[in-house]
Amino acid sequence: MLGGALSLLGAGQTLHPRLGSGIESTRVQWQAVEGFTRDRLEVLAEDFATEVLVPSVETDARRLIAEAKRAGRKLVLLAETIDAIATPFGRALGFEHVVANQLVFADERATGDLVAPIVGPELAPRRLAALADELGVSLSACAAYGASGADRLLLGAVGSPCGLHADPELARLCRDLEWPKVGAARSGVAAVLAQLQEGT
Image (cartoon, rainbow, N blue to C red; front, side, top):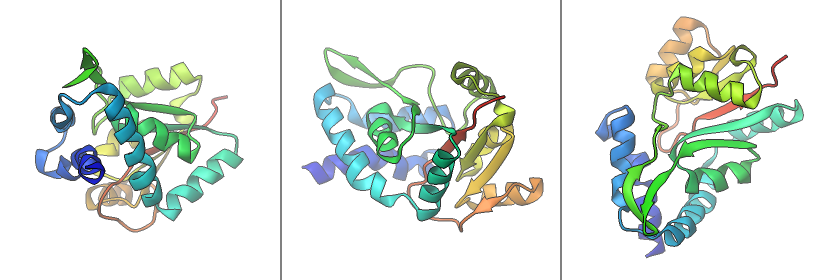
């Protein structure tokens, strides 16, 4: 049962390419958890984060996180997944702030809907600017790492963009805009890691 439930929680990651991109695909992928109780979802989500996602984080990503910590930067994880997964995942890797989706609950059961505004594949520049302002940083002083072409708005909004195991679309963009890339493309789950540097 646990394995099946963990697969369910990961279904959004594997279904995403077939659903297309955008906020609607992010919304649709979480309809699968409708009816789950809040406490059960929290247990399953934490297990999925710590047993599946954390061990899958690439060495390059871990190195970049460690370098950012040593430099005294604020670490922010931007995730399309739900906060019940993103929070323990971010905590395990040392992120100070997590921006993720929240499920809507009615009578302690998930409705399958997400609380607006939704964190989708493309985070609006206005929302990024608001987040940076809330954290007391300037986007021009921020570095961000993305793995897919959908991360182009995030990367284009910061002063130091970088492709991390970039997919072909993002790799082309990095080449065209002369953004640095770290590591070769990887298949499977790709987390968007964003590191926000203290503004001056």
